[in-house]
Image (cartoon, rainbow, N blue to C red; front, top):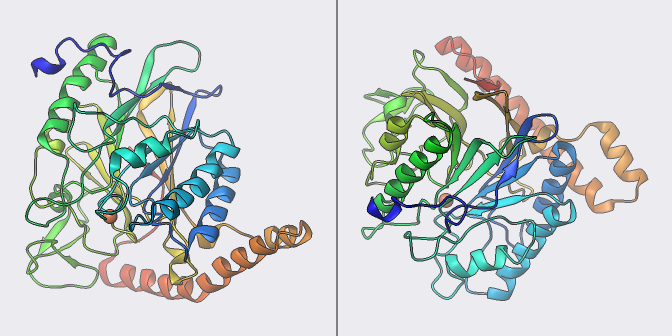
Length: 391
Ligand SMILES: [Fe+2]
């Protein structure tokens, strides 16, 4: 702890450039994750992300890992990053990046540090390489200032949740980062007159406590999924707990728990932990006052997942930072018939093809999903929706 006792927030290498609530006193965040960009999906994915940015115009885009294919061909990797970051650069949007298990798993590809350096060649990036201070790369915080003063009104935590542990399991946020978080949280609290600065946390991998927030069942039931490591235990939404969205697959947390969630409960500043990694899960469960939320994969490669892939939007009002709203947008819902007509009129042939692909391929899938949802309601009495989260 002594390492952080004299921390100077302004000079601290783990603090990004601050951002600000917009002139309407709101902060709009677009959460993108698991784009896994490669030759098979890059063009459609970045075109769709661009359309989403035009529609939402977020104050900041947060990207939480497994961003691009990084399989040893460094010039290809850089090319994917170029195309992704150009979407934001050309729209003058601010971007913060951290990493997942796949970003640096290829030994002949780019390291996390090299990737971070490359992301930061784009002026839209406010991402931070935390250097030697912390393990991994991409653990930092982004203070959010008031719209018309320099008071820190909100905060965004970015965590590198690592890739794999020595035994080959998925990793979790390690102890050094937990200690860093606790110390930095105290600094922010002190600056805020002794009150915690409400925050969101973003990272690739979900916290293991998700299994405490879900309901354990002894045998497989409809809409339950096995535990990541104890495969004989099954889990489903607990009807007695506030939960949201869709639960489609086993939450793949790391094996060893290094205390991140407990530290956040102790500090009382984090409203929600937003993760990716599990591509088709788009749910939130509330546990010990914190929303544990998984966002869906943001890539599109012409498969059936147009109804399940997309992005999440979070909004906070500077006049009440203890609450927020969240919504999930799927690629399938993005285009109306009129949108496709106007793309045709503008001569955007690639756009027409992509919008049609997303819309038409998703159609049958949507019918299937709605039948499943109706069936869920019939069997469990629980309505499965994409309703807004509001704490
Ligand atoms: Fe992942």
